[in-house]
View 1 (cartoon, rainbow, N blue to C red):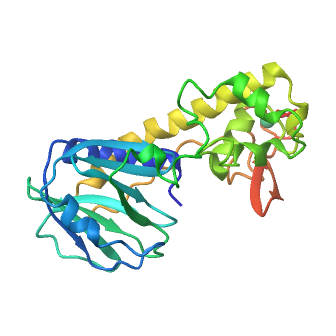
View 2 (cartoon, rainbow, N blue to C red):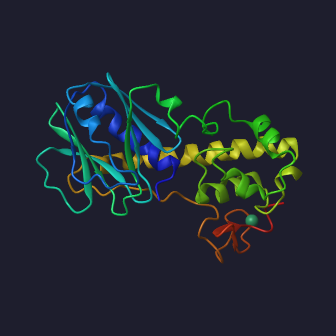
Length: 271
Ligand SMILES: [Zn+2]
């Protein structure tokens, strides 16, 4: 599933191809996405220039002169920049054709993705307005984590994956950030000390920033006609490494199930 770094990588990959370009056609081949695509947006955005390619949490925001297209990749969605003439393949649901002769093509086998439109400021859209702070922005820091962990006895891993408190920390990055911060995934959130909250906030930022950076090396995958989305495999510390030696202390990495998700950790390095 595309997580925040993949979405940011996608945003950076499409940005130079879309900003300043005019939408010559919006073709919805199959409107049965997570929510049915409202076809009235087609005439609204056709002929409009794209001013900005933004992101909020895992939503990509294509800001046009008439309003903003809000795209979510869902569980299996991907966007590619292709020459308009490229034949469609299975699960290509939407084409946003541009005056440069390319199309931004949305493919999504499982159709949990979505395409919405708002003429308003997207930050006031019902899906976006209640979102928690972005982990890569300054507002998210140790003090913020300290505040939201007080009186919460839920395990810290589950807290940082709660999108009402922090957006965009998926299962991979939660395990990795807790390893970097040397904090046990099962620790009660409220038992973290202030310095630990600071460490964890920095670890979350570093983990996501690294993933975005590594994802950046696969940007070419978004422009090739044969390009599958190039979701990277970064050098992970613990995720899916159970039984393998910890990269710090060489003891075997452990795994357990937490909130129906696999958690990976080192019982020696994490306290
Ligand atoms: Zn270790």
